[in-house]
Structures are given as C-alpha cells and as structure tokens.
Image (cartoon, rainbow, N blue to C red; front, side, top):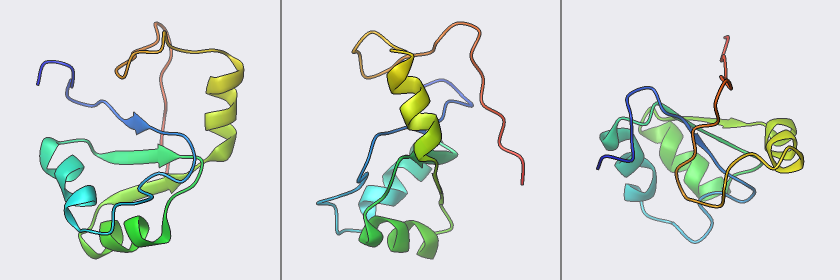
Length: 90
C-alpha cells in the first residue's frame, strides 16, 4: 500500500479496537510495519491482544485532543502534517 511510509504511526481517536476481539486486529498493523498505535483510549480486548503479541499501544488523550483542536488533517485516512513530528521517549 503506497499510503503507508516507513516510520508512520497510527494516531486514532477513542475506543480504538472496539468491536475487534480477534488477535488479527492488532497483529495486522504489526505485520504491516506500523510500529505503534497512539489513541485517546483502547478497547481492553485490543490492548490484551496487542500486549500478548508484543505490539505497543500508547494511550495519550492529550495528543488526540491537541490534534482535534488544531484541526490537523483534511479528513482523509492518511495525513502527514507538514512540520509535525512525534517523539516517543521511554
């Protein structure tokens, strides 16, 4: 898929993974090469499946609200805002 570029992160809204009780919901993103998902919140089942498969999920409602308030993006599924980067420091 040409929409994904190496190093892209998935930033989602709230209740990410709701309705997805199968492991494939988490592992398909991992398989595609998406290193992690950042969301306002996650379904407990999604997080458990991701954790069991070594896939990283970060809950960060502040980032989601910032992006919403800033009206980042143009409504398309894939958006790469100019000049914006995210640094994840463990």
